Length: 300
Image 1 (spheres, rainbow, N blue to C red):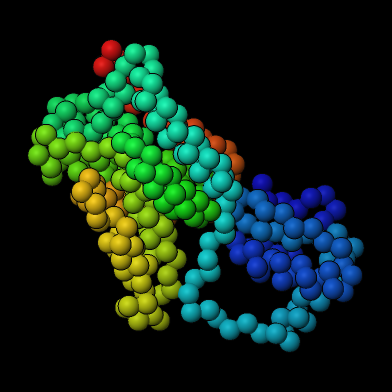
Image 2 (cartoon, helix red, strand yellow; image 1 turned 90 degrees about the vertical axis):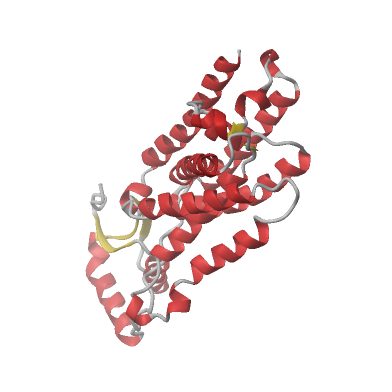
């Protein structure tokens, strides 16, 4: 689906927006009409057939006069759509669960039905590793997770698209809770979106690591700086407070890092398709909704 429109010729096709914008500026400055379209993860510059020869000559002359040195790192990935929508759904979900929990909606104890208790999880109550991500103890608890989750979620959404990013965050956050249940005593209880928040941090670190330049051209400290930065941020924000479940933060970060290293290999063309982002976004919601339906049914 990347053919030129009828009567137009494609002069530039690149995943780097700046490269396409530069060529467009060159053509516009000499009065050559042009169009730019973002499709399937690529930025494309079109000109009408009658202007194509002159446009190619202008671009060739520009690049000859302004040679570009080979960059030390691979070009950054483009920003994808859906990041803001993903954060809004995240905030609405946490707010609704908090409201339902406070008012004991349907006459049920939502906290008891959805909290992550190691023994219950390992006895087969799998839904708790998902539902616990949406539960909070008080306004301060939910407020901090809304702030950090929105920031990390927005950045992850721009890097991978809102749907793919939040599906990854939900899956990795759930796996982080499962790992926490495996290493904690049977009576250990944990709730809060922070496990998913640090899974989002792991996603961002994995994205940065994947986008590094060739190892031979970078010093070790520079190449692994995203991971070092992620660990430092985890230590600064994920440790402290009497009720802080440090292990949940660590397992969430590690789960996010592992799962996200696989997600970073998704082709740009797929990430750029709205249908892919919509489908994965709906899948993330269905995982949370399905877990709550099963958990409330079991509690009832």
